[in-house]
Structure formats: C-alpha cells, structure tokens
Image (cartoon, rainbow, N blue to C red; front, top):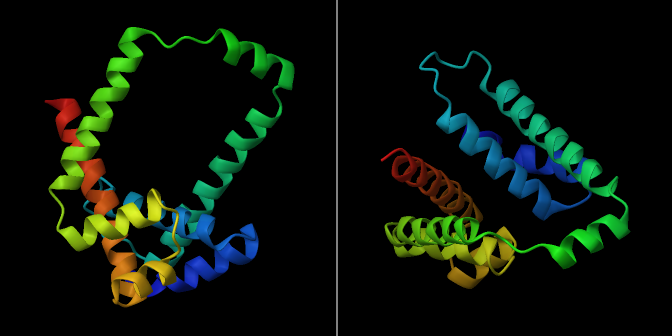
Length: 159
C-alpha cells in the first residue's frame, strides 16, 4: 500500500488545494488502514485507501462547516467565560505526558521527522532536505510515529 502514498497525496492536493493538508489526511488514512481490527485481507487496497482518505476529508469538512455555523458572538462569549475544569486540565496534562512518553520510545530519526512535521509545520521535502534523507523515508517515519503514538496511548488508556 505504500506504493500509493504520493499518488494519493497528489490526488487530494488537487482537490483540497493544500499539499500539507493532503499529507495530513493521507497519514491519518494510512494509520486507520494499518490499525483496522479485521484480519481479513483487503481485496482492493488502492480503492480501500482512497475511500478511507476521502471519508476523512468529508468528516473534516463536516466538522469545519459545523464550526463555521456558530455566530461569532456566541463563540466570543463562550470563550470569555470558559474555564476548563481541573479534571479536564489534568486529563489534558496526562495525554501530553503519554504522548511525550510514546515519542521518547521512537528512534531519534522517526521522532525528529514527526516533530518537524507536526510541531514546526515543515513539508516532507523540507524535512528530507534538512535531515539529508529521501522523502519516502520521511513519509514512512511520520506514519510509523503516528501509528506508534496511537497504539501506546490506547494501551495506556485501557490499562
């Protein structure tokens, strides 16, 4: 399925008008496919991957349009009076701790690619150039990092 990565990024970039957003969707699609619970082989992996990615785009669009439907006054007043509960703050801190622990378990190159993409917002070609590796290595590192973090956080949540 890794053969379809660049093809799918190009396809989504054309539709979304944003290469970085397309890369993020493709990362999420790969992680979803890799984490699926069924042991049954996928009959048409390319079609399955495309359908997963398009579903993620549709879900993102729905969430975005729901947020845009809120009048600004409501958002402003809610934000002004919003005070997260101590429990919510603690949960958030625990999640950040879990993420940091999961990232610490990764090989240095994998962790660095992930952080350069997700924290610094660099594109795959920029990361590849900075680290002196191929773009495909960057792509694999980011997908592996996302998968590892999700798996570890699920494990810790269920413990």
